[in-house]
Amino acid sequence: MTGHVVLTDIRTSYGDTEVLHGVSLEVAPGTVTVIIGPSGSGKSTLLRTINKLTDIDSGLVRVDDEIIGYRIDETNPGVLHELKEKDVLRQRSQIGMVFQSFNLLAHLTALENVIEAPLRVHNTPKERARAEGLELLERVGLKDKTDSYPAQLSGGQQQRVAIARALALKPKVLLFDEPTSALDPELVDEVLTVIADLADSGTTMIVVTHEMRFARHAADTVVFMADGVIVEKGSPEDIFRHPHHERTRDFLARVTGVGA
Image (cartoon, rainbow, N blue to C red; front, side, top):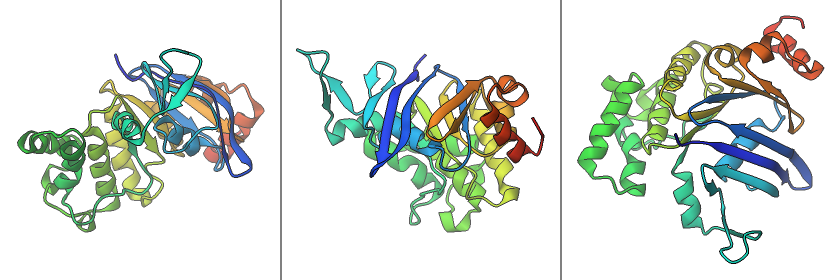
């Protein structure tokens, strides 16, 4: 099974401020890892290092047997060379990402948004891309919105189109960066339901979210981050019922209203 993600001692900075302080994390293929924590803890930054949308200062990101953003010197295995942009784009095409904002192309229909990347990146024949795009829109519950433009869709529907678009490249890993944060409260569940359904598909998923109910029920592993480090990780049972660290207990008490 593909989609094995290994982050080793990741450090990254914005200007003079180090945001991630030597973060290491392993995500098993086909599992769902949910990252929680207060705003500013480095959750989204960590997610963006996986597909090199954010550069790292030191450390390594591996997906399966590939180092993301670098290649090993053939004559000196201890030396890494930065990849050319076209090679980074190839790697990135195997790591789907769903953002807070939907980032749909306003002049394209829902189906056209979904099939644009397979046509452009993989040179998929148009009829096949269309057939697969229709299947994906049906999978996210939008079979009847094929010809609708983003402005004609609700926020939840737009985010579901964005999920279908990310799936269209058949990624090894699917990343979600707070996918419901831009939605009205009544639209959150429809998106979380789609993501929860994807959890059974065998695609490795890493989700940054503030939705604790989703983390409890959909995650195989919950990671709690604060101040640029992983404070603790474990099963939903471990984290939500038996957290070891006071920092975790304090955070959960604030967001759930339940005392430690």
